[in-house]
View 1 (cartoon, helix red, strand yellow):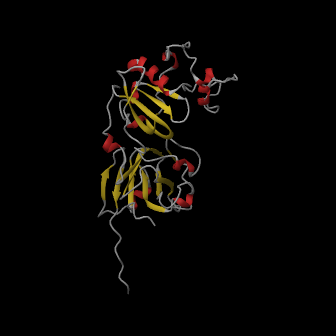
View 2 (cartoon, rainbow, N blue to C red):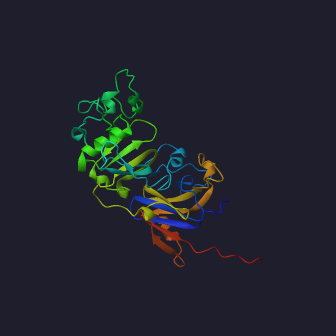
View 3 (cartoon, rainbow, N blue to C red):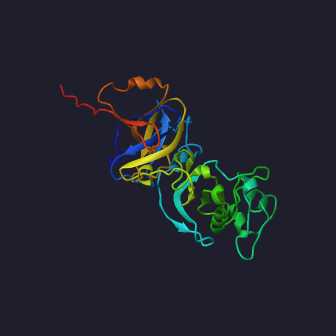
Length: 310
């Protein structure tokens, strides 16, 4: 049994979008994970609740394996765009800005190298790579299920340097980039995403992407120390939960791969969302609660009292 995570916690949320903060000692920001199961389930046996979701959502326990704590990976890596030496970008690993893409009719593709120029819209994955057989290396960024010919995903099939050059030339209309870490694929983001490290309420988690924020982008910024995780606190956010009560289960990455339900055997505590009748089960005394950085509260239950032997 892990000794790294604190137990007997209750998480309370008044809205359906909240966060879960796991406290402890020597926590692994990159690899430790949580899952949320039904209130009557058993950690280590039950599948995740279908009433709980997060930005990296897929089916089953694997969905939570792909949802790292905030700040996993290198959280701050300033880069200079070689095409425009006046623009700096900050990199936030395993993150992207949700549904805040620059509209296609505003994406004006310009010359990205001295020998290459394309018409407006030609770098869009769905027009550049769909319906045709192409040997263009950049079409490795085309994802069939997302970039179907009839669907405009907003993705650009170009290299990172070209994505940054285009964002530079869009000025204030582009505040950052969702850049795939393995493929020539990116999304340009509007000013709603804010500056480094991005506005919390529009940021999502995805281990396949990194968020490149313009250092000069407008908008409020989070305190990167308080907003991210540390070996003493793992912040999992955002999490969307329907009203009700649930159990929060923890996977200690030193003990398992966090890929199967059995890896999430440690019960951290309960999650209560407004309207949940289980709230009445919380003790009326000895309860210590505090606000979480990304919404909701975490409460420490009083320690269990030893029962004397008869």
